[in-house]
Length: 423
Image 1: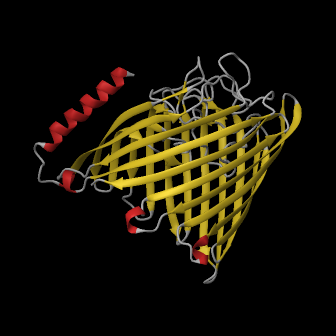
Image 2 (image 1 turned 180 degrees about the vertical axis):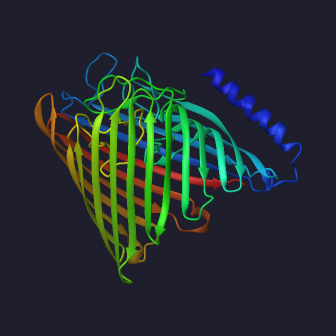
Image 3 (image 1 turned 30 degrees about the vertical axis):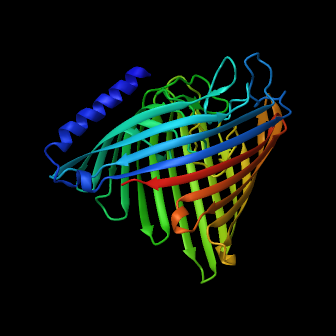
């Protein structure tokens, strides 16, 4: 851990010294941006029927009845411009600090802070990650820390600090409306850790998975028509699985008051190495809007011997029914969702929004017995509108989960975000 910090600091200092000296007149400095993101995060997770699988355990091996953390995050993001010339060079950096404000003895395990394996209590965590980048025309190559939001990997940002990945990435926008992306990640820093670790696989019913230091990916995103986006990606978590993703997203206005949205996604995952991965996932969601109201409904179906695989450690799979608590990706599980969104600007309350959704999963088995599960989420978000507080937001999040063969959960989160532009 210390070696990683010293390496990052040395690399950052060396690059700054090399780049800044000869190009003080370039856009490296003038186009630089920096902001400090403050996040105050409280989470309480109450386990019901915690004699069933799914509850976390205390250091003495007994079931823990609740998990509770309150912390303060400081996230400093710096993004430089590029030096002048045919190939421009730059440097980004991400500094993260998560401080425990309160966590009762033995109630860690929310995923927000580092949890002691011995006492169950939570601790502070921090990290610093530089990213070197080079730009040629409209193509950027970067090496270092990344926060991907891609169909084959999405960094988790639902706790105190975001998850990050370490590796190389290429993004090209040479052709209008077409974005090409490729890369390889070698390590991941989990949302509640300061360490850079190999990437494990998660897939319900899988065997033979190993922590990997190679996640290779490539894909394209194309804006075919106004409101229509098509995507295709291929990914490989070495010695674990291969995965193809194809999707479309179409949004349009039917009239001044009515809107329409259709979203379809297909995942095909196959084994690699000594695993038994075998999964196909199909999903679609249809939505209609009217004067600030959005009502959506969708279905998700799976085929194969295992659930859909994805990188473990808190990473969010890009599936329709991945919710706040559960992902609904057990082997052979099918699920459906109903969702309602409302923007209170329609009533003259700008900045206030509501989201409520319900997902029910069925047709799967746990320990050889047929099982069912459901989750209900409610989010209320207010983005302050005054000039002095325009970057301040408050989220109240409530979650309920129940399963016939897994521990139930009642959960509440209070999240305050405030972003301060520095450059």
